[in-house]
Length: 319
Image 1 (cartoon, one colour):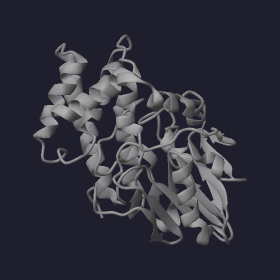
Image 2 (image 1 turned 30 degrees about the vertical axis):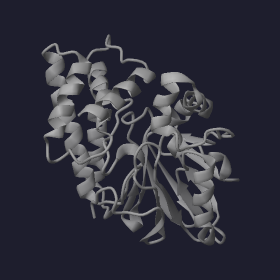
Image 3 (image 1 turned 180 degrees about the vertical axis):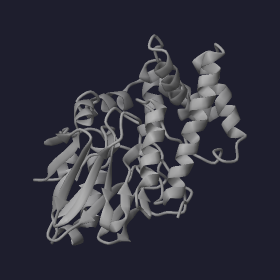
Image 4 (image 1 turned 90 degrees about the vertical axis):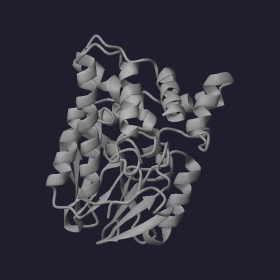
């Protein structure tokens, strides 16, 4: 089932056993996926989208199903806005996230991205390049009403959904949602399929462990946070990338190579690697290398977020 960008379509896709995926090609910056698990008279929504327009379109598409099985529970897999900024449109639902994700949601309000994308000069131009397709005005952050640490089993219309905390990895509080009877897992941004993972929090070893956990689950269908629906082969590909980056960055750090030079060098190596060179968002290697360096050296300080996005843009323009 593993597929590349461009081979899947926007909208709601039935996966079987009452599970659905809402997909947004091409899966690049901000174009995230969501999920719907339908029980007897109630549904569970996995994530909202990056702005109100997109979330409203998704909920409208789901309405023939949710009219008789209303969304009773919303799970936010993590704190990035493209998975939670539409929360305010899901009326009356209990919102669940990890304790760490709930805290992180308070740290990057929609107003921050609204300001960056509206800014004058080079900064505004930079952030509009990444996020100019989205509208952040009018978003009122609705935070989780229930949090958990470790694992939590929730019931929706007589169906069990297992929430498993796997962060910090992509962010401080990542979780996956596993539907055992449907052999389906919704991964949030623990999986990018056809696009390069970005390790904001790390360590990479935690993310590798999360992949190992998913490979050990009894699942046939894997819905990533970005990209087409896949199976365990997609999990294995992401794991291979993370193992490669961890080893490549660690070796350069041990040799005294500057993190930015290491990122440029590894980007060139990825460009020559048939396994990874077709993936989008290659520039994310700059953030991933910074995370490796920070993990191994507590005194290391990553550049600020504006500089990180400048570096990613530069790599994608030159490699």
